Amino acid sequence: MAILKADPDYRRNVLLLLVALAVIGFAAIQWGLPKLLAYIEEKEPMEGIRFIRALLIVVFASALPMAFYMYRFGRRILRSGQFPPPGTRVIRDTEIIEGGAARRKGRLLIVASIFMASAALAGMLYVPYLLGKIVKQLDAIQEHSPDYSPPRRGGRGE
Image 1 (cartoon, one colour):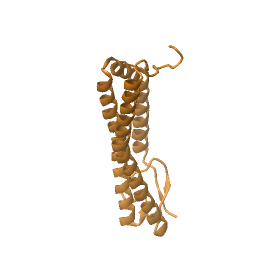
Image 2: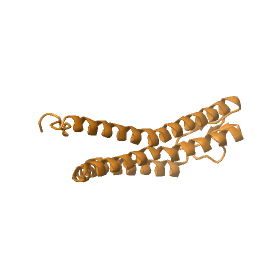
Image 3: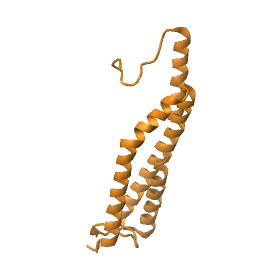
């Protein structure tokens, strides 16, 4: 049983990157989200819907680079017959798996990456389309009931 030793510098860099991403995510939610919601509320309804649709496409598209990386990593495992493949740096000591077990992991990563990319593409195409359909239905309801107004944020008379 061979062990691939952890790379301390790589571990530190990965942890620093994760902390930085967590801080950026916190800041985006804490300060960016309220500004984004205010920006959307200032827009005309159809312009706001177009903005939200574009934002949804960007959110779903963000999964594509990870799916591509997983696919390439799975291919490297299949080619080398070893997990982790030669030249891979790890953040903790990792047992090297060879042969059929490694190839199964490689195939699993490839299948998972295909599912991830498919879900991202479906979300990029279908969710904005579905949002457009919902808006058209709301418009139709408003045309038939002039006194109808969709509920506002907060929902409890706020």
